[in-house]
Length: 195
Image (cartoon, rainbow, N blue to C red; front, side):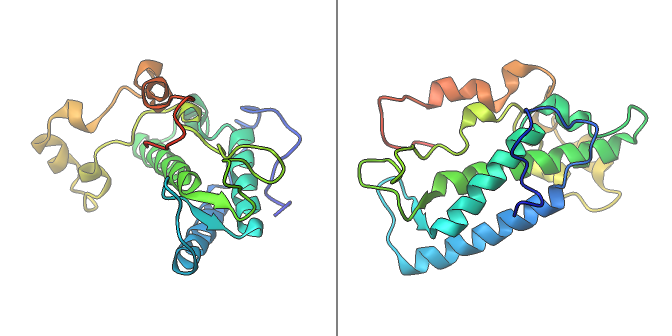
C-alpha cells in the first residue's frame, strides 16, 4: 500500500506526473468486492452504510488520501495530465474516466464505515467518517452516458441526435462543479446522509 500512497506532499503538486489511475481503480475494485462480502455478513445502519473490516477501511482511507494529494478531484489538474497538443478524444476519455472514478469513490465512501465506527457517529479514535464529500469533487458531472457508451465510430451520430447542452457541459466553469452543490445538499446539523 505504501508504494502508491502519497503521504508527505501537498495537494495539486504532482500535475506533471502521470497519475496511477489504473492502480487506484484496482484498489477501488478490491474495496467494492469487500463491500459485497461485508453486506452479506452484516446489517447496515440508518444511513445504509456497511461496516468494512478495518484493514479494508484503512485501504479506502489511504486511497482517498492519495487521490487528494495528487489533486485528482480538481478539474484543471485532470486537463494538465495531457499536453496541449494531445488529441481531443484522448483528453475527453481520460477526463471522463477520472470523473467517473471520483464519483464511484465518493459512493463507496458514503456506503462504508469502519468496523470500529461507534453508535455515536465517530470512529474509535474520535474522528468522523467523512473520507470524501461532495465539496471535495471540484469537477462537473460526467457527460452523457450515450456518448460514453457509443460504439467506436458512432460518436458523431450520438452528437447529431442529441441536444448538445445535455451532452457536453462547461467543465471549466466552477459554478457547474459538484462541489458547488454541496452547500445545498449537506447540512451539518442533520446526521442522516441524503446523498
